Image 1 (cartoon, helix red, strand yellow):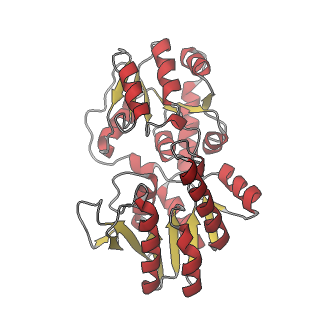
Image 2 (tube, helix red, strand yellow):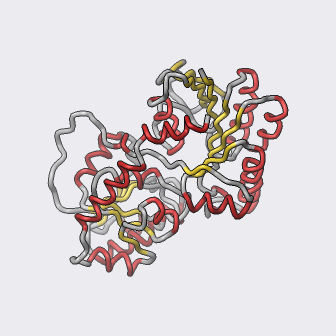
Image 3 (tube, helix red, strand yellow):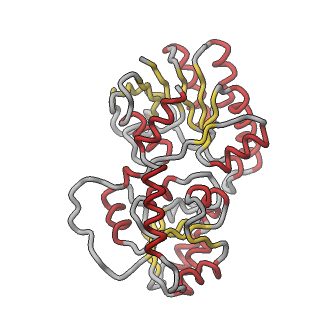
Length: 351
């Protein structure tokens, strides 16, 4: 029996976030010879379970997000010393400053998923970026195994640090809920986007394209969480073919939106393999993705790509595109690469 301690998430059961969904499904599809301890935030989980999916849950009285995430991860790492796991799985680099100390006192294998080059994200200020870059360097230097979720990030790690990393993406098949949903129906064709409202996700570009093309889009996101989102809400909320929807955390409601849509628009330009993209690929819909190396790797260069408002409008108005072939191809890639049972086995192989 191998004991694996997991650091760096709000907790499980998962309600939101790529890493939360990852741990939810690592524990769900765990082999019999793997036992997980998962560190959770007692400040953010409304119900504090002792066990979930066979994993033991341990609580830290700090928030797992924002600036407090650094201390949260550090405390979680240091508490792990008492339990002597075979493996410590660290998700993200916020608390990586504690990994060298952990290595002094523990023989546990340290595996770190460095996430999607968090320090490059536009939302961080200069100091935060410098700290996250420093933390990334520590994680890469002191971890026994580095996991990246996209080949483009693996290439970056090799060039920047001279280290090999293991590429393991995310599953998306949990989005295909098995519950009995009766109101999946045909309606006016619409495109769909589901994402956090941040500039690097090219929200402004997508909305500008649809406002000009007159195609219908349903766009789900946290519009009120920052000034960027609020400004877009003021500008586009009254446009008849643009439907701005507040965050939806019910996977059954998201299932209905995804099953009913004509195609999926993915604007992310940073962050590696994005969970919302691999989830959408499972629905056998054509994928229109922002043209960057992360998205091209995820979709094997077989989606429709845009890099500007004009190029997206051209795609939307092009009646000669083989959208059926695109949709079938996206589904095939998703089934082959992005199912949770496959992902769980890939992680366990590293333990």
